[in-house]
Each structure stands twice: as structure tokens, then as C-alpha cells.
Amino acid sequence: MLKKKDIISISDFTKEEILYILKTAEEMNKKDCSELCKGKILATLFFEPSTRTRLSFETSMKRMGGSVIGFSGEESTSRSKGESLYDTIKIVEGYADIVVMRHKVDGSARLAAEASKIPIINGGDGSNQHPTQMLLDLYTIKQSQGKLENLKIAMVGDLKYGRTVHSLAAAMAMFNAEMYFVAPEQLQMPNYIIEDLQKSNINYHIVDNMQDVIGKVDILYMTRIQKERFPDLQEYEKVKNVFILNKKLLETAKPNMKIMHPLPRVNEISEEVDIEPHAYYFNQAHYGIPVRMAIIALLLGCVK
Amino acid sequence: MSSENIFKENLFNHKSNKNLAQELNDANLAQESKQEINDEYQQMKLGKIKEGTVLDHIPPDLCFKIINLLNLEQHGRVISAATNLTSTKMGKKGMIKISGKILSEKEVNRIVVVAPNVTYSTITDYQAVKKVKLKVPQEIVGIVKCNNPNCITNVESVQTKFKIVSEEPLKIKCNYCERTTVKEEIKLLM
Image 1 (cartoon, rainbow over the protein chains, first blue to last red):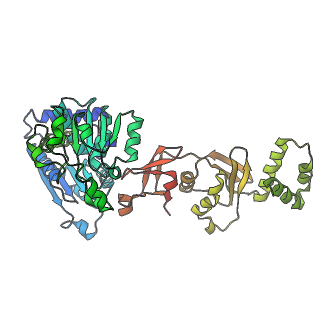
Image 2 (tube, rainbow over the protein chains, first blue to last red):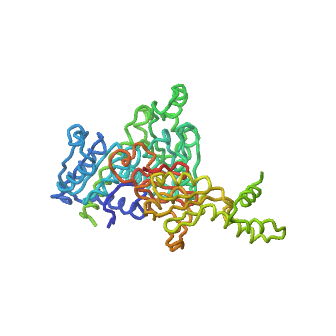
Image 3 (cartoon, chains in turn blue, green):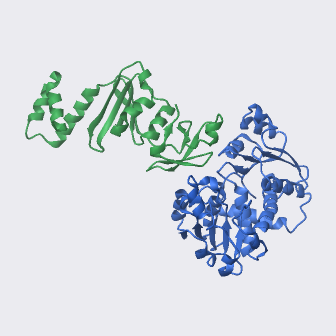
């Protein structure tokens, strides 16, 4: 049984707990779960709007026979009247059995967890953590490669500001992955992440182009480079096409190499790649359902 | 003028301490005695307090910072402070004596965050009744400001909380936004 009351940050998890969630997610796909959470209510508090995360949590709860209440955007809530997050959570804990929340402020999920008697799932707190994305990324990698240990993974794009790749690097370090960080210099992986990898004796490489790594890796994890991250637009113009994945670049890829992306994509993966056997980003989005079903069911105690 | 000469000159000028000056002039004075006189001289300059707090082994550049962070300018009783005193352990050190005030736990923790390893003594009837070398607590609550402007502690009314990542050099991590802060970046809450 998962001993956690809440799902807030990757730093709260042991490797065993992560594997337990992934195993439970695999079981969700195999059995009838339609009444697993019958009579339970999930509150979706999306202070900041989201499409995939909110819909996949709602779908997950409904597939297990539970109900959903909630809001998306602060405008229609008492937050717009100045209510504190603490008060909002204290109210909702009397209405629902479990909460998933997204908030633009870093650390808001931890505060909510401290305030709440019922389990809180962090659906993204500012630029800080998005742990269920990390768990579904691991689930996707395991489904595609049959294992998590000793894989080679390249992370491409905006590695400086992307919370997804920060969590993924920390998680893959638990499984002794060899990592390639492919980014323009100004968007490379932050030092504190690199320092943690060094402490764990993880083999990593700083790289400035995709061609050199595509033939070496099992997973190519793409992220979007945002124009607004560049103070000098000339710098953006120089690098924007270097990190676009097209069909030609895949010629050297291993047969079972899979491309992942947290989505939404803009132009960093050409549409011609979608029909390639390497494309796995839509499967990845779909895997959010069994993983989130497992998380909800475990936290509610509906599965042990 | 060397620091030792300044020391001697000051000592000679102090009428009540002529016997010490004489000793200092003795060419065969043992090193230990010199240190003893030095210590006595320092104590003399700061003056003993009947009751209150003594902070010793303060890094010399942090002496005045500690006076500020304890808001001692508001304290109506005698405060004596000296810095760049000779120290066997540290080379140079600062010392603060605060008459009529025992520091609260929060005040002590404010000191620890900027100057770990300070020696803290409480004085009763001119005697040190408690003397401890301060140590950084495992959790720092309500003392340090989080430097991340988008941290919930800077947006809502939430007490800050930091965990210690490393004691030497001091590195702390926000319990909420998980950003780490190194010693040089630490800002105290008022």
C-alpha cells in the first residue's frame, strides 16, 4: 500500500513507491475498475486552466465509478474575491474525498497538502513540480522498452525551464539511465540538477545537436523551445531549427527507439513523424489514464 | 602601526591596568601569558555584565550585522561590542555583550542562519550559567525569506520553512517551492 497521503513532489518518492504505482497502473488496464471508486468524489481545483491534466483526471475518476466536482480558472471562484488558498482547501475538504489541483504559484500544492485532511494530488504548481506527468512518463518508458533500468535517454529542447525534464532526469537517475541533454547553451539543464546526477554517479552528456544522439538512445524526449525565453531574438533564430525533429533525422534511430513529448507541441516535431513507428507521444498522453486511476485509487485506499 | 603595537599603546594608556603593561614589557614573557593578557584586555574593553547574553566567536565581518538583525538599537540597556579581536581558534573574531536580555529561540536561530558556530552564553550574576556553541537546526521556520518571488510564501500569508541541504557551506531548501538558497543569498525576514 502506498504510505503517502498526498502526491506533491518527486522528492517525496522512493524507487519502490514509484514501481508500486506503475505496477498498480498496469493492473488497472487488465481488470474491471468500473466500480472501484463508487461513491467517492474527486475535486478538480484548476486555478490555472489545463486541458490534458484535468480531462485525464476526470476520465480516470469516472472510469472507476466516482464523481467529479471542480472548476477551471479562478474567475468563477471566491479566489477572485480574495479568498486564500488555505481557506479554499479547508472548504473543499468537507465536500470531496480527494483533490487534484493546478496553481500558478510554486509551492501551492505543498501548502494545500498541509492544510488538508483529504489527499491532495499536485497537477502542477507553477514551474515547480508535476509529479503525475513524471509517473506517466515512466509508465510510458516501461511500456515501450519493457524495463526502466539502464536505458539511454535524450532530453531535447528547453531543459532550463521545463519542469517535466527536471523531474524526469531525477526519476531516471533512480534507474541508472545514461542521459543526453540536447539544448542550446542558454537553455541547458540547470546546475542543481547536474550536481544531483554527479552525486548519484549518473553518466550524462551535454550536447548541442540531435544528430549526434538519435542513433544512441532508447528514448528521445522532446520539449518545446519557447521564443520568449530568449532575450535576444537573433539567438532564437539561430537555434530554432536545430531542435526540430523530422523524418530524415530518424534514419539512424534504433528500431525500438521511441519519441516522447509532454505536449502540446508547436513545431518541434514535424507532422511527418507522427506515422513513424518511433512516434509514441499520443500513446504517452493516453497512458495518463491508467496512471492517474492508480494514483487516485491508491490514495483513496480503494486498492491496497 | 602593527596591531600588536596598537594593543600595547592602548594598554599603556589605561591607568587601571599598569601592572599588565609592565608584564607586557617583559622581554621574556611567555606566549601563554601574552594570550592571557590579551584575553583580559579584550574582556576589560568590553566590560563584564551582571546578567544578559554574551555572543562570542562571531566572524568579524558579521558582528554589526548581528547587532542589526537582533534590533539591538531598540534595546535600552548597555550593549558592548568589539570586532577584529585576536582569537586562537579563528584568527580574528567579534564579541557582543548584551546586558539585561536573554535571547529568544527565534533570535538565536536568526543568528545561527547568518553566523553558525557562534558561542552563546547566558550570564547571571557575572557568571556564565549556560554556554553553548550554536548549531544550525534541521528546519528553519519563519526566519528566512524565500528568494523565489513566485513562491507561495511570498504570495500568501504562509510562514516560511526551510530544510538544511548542507551545513558547511550552508545550503537550505524551501519546503514549498523547493528552490535552494546558499548562505550568501540568505535574506532574513524582519
